[in-house]
View 1 (cartoon, rainbow, N blue to C red):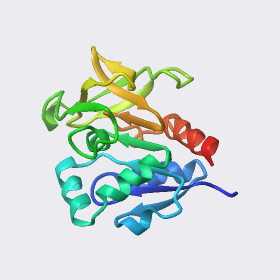
View 2: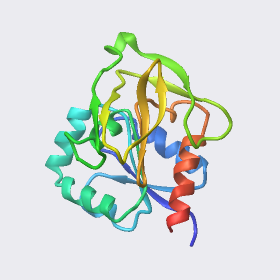
View 3: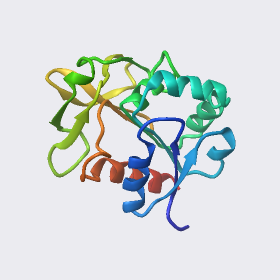
Length: 187
């Protein structure tokens, strides 16, 4: 079958860091900018960046319905920071959760923290929180898998994982490896 082909939404934001991490783990990547870019991919990453700009780009390129159809197919999705916001009820509506934007404050309040994630072996993962959201509420099908100081910052629902932080900016590939393992299990 060869290495998996992972799409990375590339309308704005930190998509290149995700691509580097995925390639380091042996995956092939494709930048997703228009609906046709979703064809043939095995999983999708929604990166951090500016969620409003990304939302406008998704609307401009007609990506909303194709992204919903891709999710309905059961393919794995990983969303980080703005990607978590895009997945929520008020944006693409793919996960049954509501994200609160800038939950920890503005840019000057950015921080780094180690986060214990359920299902991730090897101890805490280092997260970079830049104008990070939190999961303000969620439905019964959403499992909260990580928190910082009592704030829900990571969740799983079906084949989707959403985190409020960036791991692609560091050296720890375990979150992306977990995502790729899910992709491999469904191929």
